[in-house]
Length: 84
Length: 391
Image 1: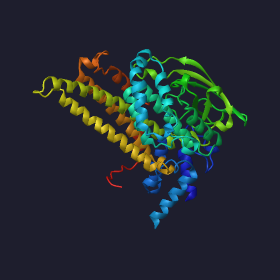
Image 2: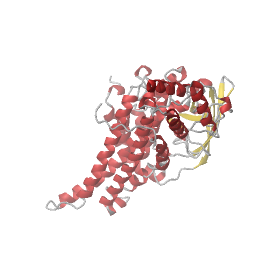
Image 3: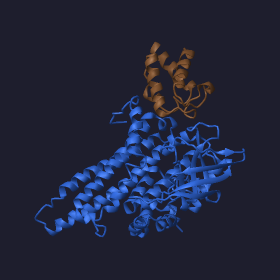
Image 4: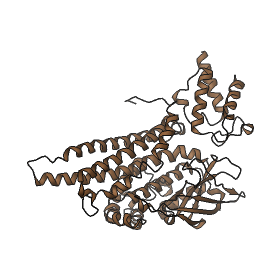
């Protein structure tokens, strides 16, 4: 799951021509790497669709989408809740 | 002896307005000159360092208190009001972003003690007005850094005691990997590139310059600019600008009211026809005030919580404020002009609205509303609308 999310996020980021995905680690600041607010919204929508989840208000902030690790943690959290 | 900082804020700002801002507003506008007298008066009343914490010599004022002062000053002189608002936005950046840095804390103390004026160099030629991208970069040897920025706008730069500039973190950084640096007057040079001859807000002297500076690396703000923008700049800019526009609208409406009252006194048996449009404009003025108060309330609730300040819904609310306030303020002034008629159109009548109209027309343009709405249109796809009327 972790790898699946990680992989999908990387693929999405790769479609941004100003982001160099090769140099991204899980902890890299995505905004510094060139993620725009519009792209972060697109990313969010695709993730919701892919994993059948919906980000609650408390996760809709800068921090959630600032690193791949944070996004993965939120998605895992939501997927767990869904399964419970 | 009572120190000025023990006195309530509004009477101090009232002194500035009556003693300096209002009497010079016409000339500041006509000559397109910096409101020197008003800045001197602000310093005399010790109003430049209000946001600085008390332990550093400031007054630890809240944003709503400062917003109210921006409104008052904007009512008397839009340019001075906007300069004061921009200074306070920078001071808020300093207080919010510099708490953990010794150097930034010492600058806070200096602002309070010496009543310094802080300017902003966030706009750059070639980035299309998007302040979250930079072309210029900080070049550091680990001890000192240097920066050269082609800043297409630096308001009141020639009069600023310090300038906060944004730049890429380093020569290899992406355009959005930005930091903010503080440069004091003795550390930067300005080469003018663009004059400021505009329709309104003429006294802000928002000329373009090549800004060049060198300073110790301690003067780089500790957190990324993106964070500083989300935690301080977005909200304070939109709230304090809106407060100034509200002041302009309030003064224009006040002039229209004075004119309708004069007519009512002349003919006590007839209700002046202009009373109805005056009531219409009053509805908008009221709406504008409510919009700003709601934003202030939201800010106050989020202030100490970085996640709340970084929430998409918070950013949406602040951007909504910008668009609403700039539209309403412009509409109120326009309606005031219609009510005052030719007396409002004249520059030499007590009911003149011309300067207000020219100044307030900057509101939808400084960060163009079209751009703000376009940014909003992606955020609202995911943000939930908070419809609750109770806590």
